[in-house]
Length: 196
Image 1 (cartoon, rainbow, N blue to C red):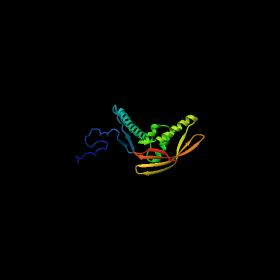
Image 2: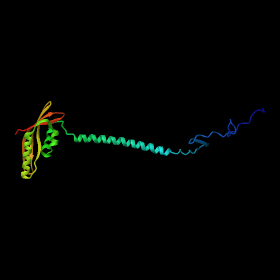
Image 3: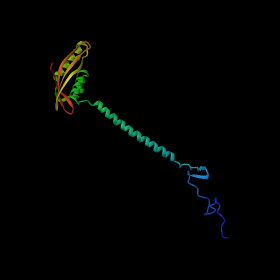
Image 4: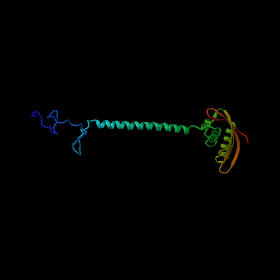
């Protein structure tokens, strides 16, 4: 039994005697002794790595801000259009807005938004001229409001009977008027006449 080799010591490798054991990759844990763990040092990051991270972060932030900005502009445009577009969904609302634009705002352009392409409003315009003359004569301002609206609709046409309450700081009178409307991509005033 002289050919038997002595037992192999546990601290030397079995194969490739004389070579050091392979090192773990950087950042991997290596056992040193039972219960102890040592982290191997991580080599420094290559140059330019920090610049790439900053550039990517900046690009993502700018992308998100761009999307939010475009969404905000779209939402703002939607609400602006909604506020700027006149409401012509019902005959009663159109008559109220038309009376406000004609008598109180004295804004002919705004009143045209609520009138038909062909309309007969001469009697109503005569009343506006009469009120303007009285305002100059008595140094006062008239305010005209609708009240007691009665709407009759027949598919594409409608009639709105309403009281026009004409008031100043010292007086008040009421006249009954009938407004004829037609649905032309929304309700519009085509005629007006005094009925009482």
